[in-house]
Length: 507
Ligand SMILES: *[C@@H]1O[C@H](CO)[C@@H](O)[C@H](O)[C@H]1NC(C)=O
Ligand SMILES: *[C@@H]1O[C@H](CO)[C@@H](O)[C@H](O)[C@H]1NC(C)=O
Ligand SMILES: [Zn+2]
Image 1 (cartoon, protein in one colour):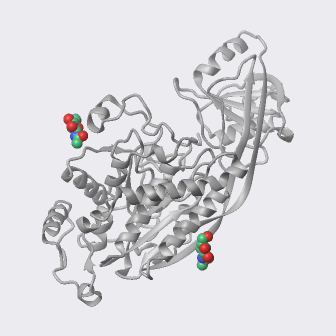
Image 2 (cartoon, helix red, strand yellow; image 1 turned 180 degrees about the horizontal axis):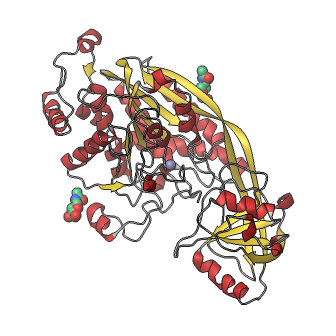
């Protein structure tokens, strides 16, 4: 039977979010003797000790990467990632036939930087950071040359003076992608490239994107680190430099794991996803071990209930290499399969130590219709639980991107990555203003101690999943499976037609 108190609470939220009427009788409930899922009954099963245990499991799995990478990692192509996929698969396979479980393997371009060093003049710029997917320097040995300032934005071949040949090109960030700049430097004969930030205060890191034979070993540095050299070069002085990167860029098979409830309307699915991979720099326990674990816990406890609508869980591979797994998945959906996905919810970084409760600011004007209803559902839940929240840009930095570009409404929650907490957010969430939400973002220290367990529990309480699994009455119907009709992409205003795609900057 239904738990009366939880039903009342749930009805209030449902009314507030226009979900419409709940069905009064559910035939599955009596047939299979499990209760129909309710938000509060599911929430009550989410326990800190289980989340922590799984975080420890994932850390142990990340340690499988030590032999090759000298530190724990779950990056795609590493034993730590294969181990993670096995772990997810086994966890779901053990759940008594509740789910249809499948794998989807695709080819991922994976880059690993083993060692890197940049020296300019007589010092190493502190902010120097090799770009993701950078090729190594020639023969994986240090290269030497003059530092040569490239004109304008370095987006045209004519911006590269003759002196770039055999030299190290210094290029400002902006206008075209890091990958374009690196390739143009390579074509001009540079032995390495250094791109400096056009904005003050922050180091520059990102990815060169799709590999090109013209790419050269490329570093990012801060504006402050670049300025003294630029002054010297503009004064006609010479600055010598050396660069060294030992890296590989390879193709590697990567596997998404998908689990769908056997129960529930198979033509109307509620889909949720988290990414199973980490960056190569560390074990990725918050990013996105936390989302991976949240979904495993919810999938485990959901088996205690019946659902009216099917729930489909996805653990994506290759998110950190540019949203590869989710892109591939959506690209493989036929129009008929696409339209069965009523909503996609993204769970990437649930437990940042200096967290804010963040909700993606999706809306029905620029995103597929239904995205706004989901956003409002999250807001109502935090409000009902006496918690503050903030809205963050829904700008394509995680796995929801391919979904909303292909007509599927989406949204999600997060707790913050490399952004800086504001003083106002300190009063709203505690923690420390002026510091990153996750000071260990994409670093070795993203380990089990890098989790805010209070935020982890709150964000694993799968209210949105339970709500939509229970009823999609009143939730906007899907109108088009592909971009022909509700073309989200074409109707985006310029500000939303974000150039970059994925968790790394590309421009
Ligand atoms: C799916 O992947 C898991 C984990 O790597 C593996 O154990 C399992 O055999 C695979 N299943 C299929 C059907 O390929
Ligand atoms: C929410 O934010 C306000 C400040 O805007 C603060 O006074 C309050 O304590 C916060 N609530 C919680 C639960 O942290
Ligand atoms: Zn992530």
